[in-house]
Image (cartoon, rainbow, N blue to C red; front, side, top):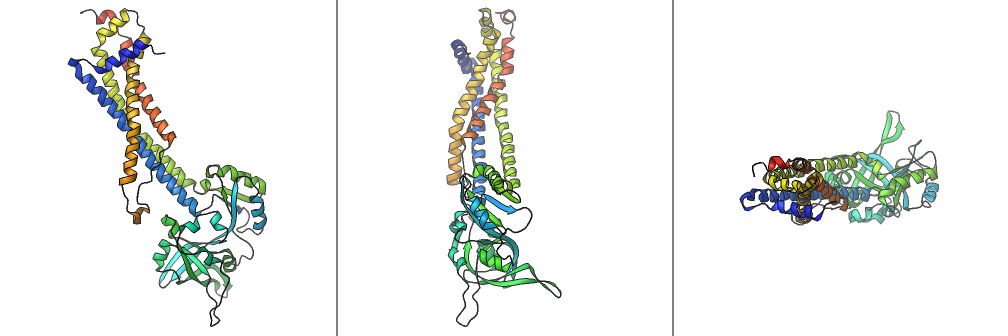
Length: 416
């Protein structure tokens, strides 16, 4: 426990005398180092957290929270029974079937390989943000029944493509494109690819180049017919009420459905990406903590100078009965004050830097898909940074405090 006199003496030692103004200057430099370190850490972690959450929201806007598939087959025939059972599981908000396959899209002289997803236009918006991502067209156009033109020719079914994919193919709303399935029908010379015309009835913008350039949607009925699936689907998409509990809910779904059903949450489906982002955030924290470590060397130098300059006062204190621990606590107070003041100033400075970055730092939207830096300040990050700064400042006091505590009063006062 720090006694009042130890705290008072510690603060006095930080001020310095007129003939030793360098001690007071070093104190301000040490506080400034801690302040800049804390502010830089808070701003960097906030930007990295913002990018991670922005990426997560875009991924979950296009994909569901949980995907259920069959371990033993590529398709699922009893998906209606699966839907009924899944919707009864706690924390499940919605579920819908889907079909997933790879095809080629051709328009004019352009060809592009994409992922074609068959969806239920009525249920898909309850699981993903497809309706919100649509920038042209309507989702309801996918559900239109087969029609014929006045001359008796069948009207092609609808397809929704990504913004980048439409630009690559040179297609616009209302244009016709060809969908080529590599898994076609057997012929005398081998497999004959299946080709079908589709009308572009919608263009979506998810905010991620990977999705906008390689994803297209058709109705689930059209997909079943095109891929010769009958009444089967690829799997079931599920939306839950808490994305951070998706792994636990996926386990509950697996337990309820039993073998051979396999439920994977969004974290498992994107494990490599989010693990890399988390590792990058951790490495940046370790690298930027070096700023505070540099400031800690200033604290060591400052306190060492104070010990040398105050050796006479320390000797008098020990001669009056001050113990080694009490002397050590005097200089530990100095380190904690430097670290505490630096942290207290650094936190609002970090918030201010985040405000400036988010408000005034603009990005080319055609390159990054965002016009401003996404900044998210987490209370946990601020707490970890603050505790790290104060802890490093405290550790920096140990050697100067020990040096002061082992001072011999008779040696210090011999020539006084």
